[in-house]
Length: 93
Image 1 (tube, rainbow, N blue to C red):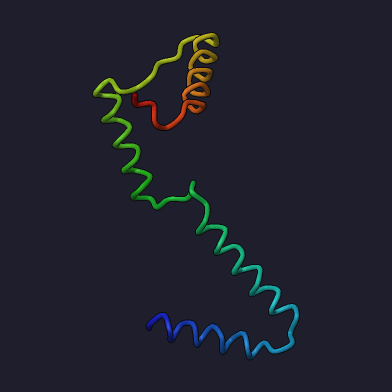
Image 2 (cartoon, rainbow, N blue to C red):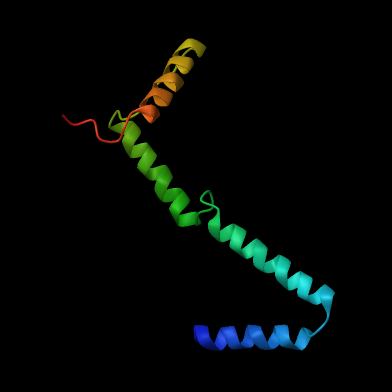
């Protein structure tokens, strides 16, 4: 089924609801949930999740990680991140 056919089917269903406010509200709520899921950057497929885990393991094996052993080191690490975020993008001379 093409996108145009699906849109027509959805519109036909909405038209059949007519003035059924409760039914239309349920459709509106469902659409909001679908859009919210689509916009959520934390959502990912199972494949993407495991790909990112594999990538993190590879980075760890290459020594590309930061180790934090104390609360003071954690504060220093977080402060460094905050300072880096404040730097302008282009620092070339």
